[in-house]
Length: 79
Image 1 (cartoon, one colour):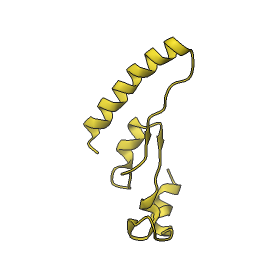
Image 2 (cartoon, rainbow, N blue to C red; image 1 turned 180 degrees about the vertical axis):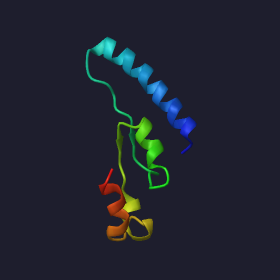
Image 3 (cartoon, one colour; image 1 turned 45 degrees about the vertical axis):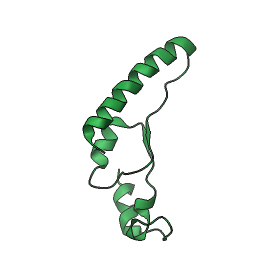
């Protein structure tokens, strides 16, 4: 994902939230990333996302059917 795409998505959702909160009086809709986050780009995701789901990156060789790779997992424990 390009940072410019995250910026644009965040800006659009901020506008949607402004109108949504005005109309409904409820909390904002969060921006959640469900794929693509890894140690090389997590700093970009953290700037724009409310929540980040990190799934298959934690698996051995990054493959979803494999077991958890403790070395890969340890990087994200410190965030």
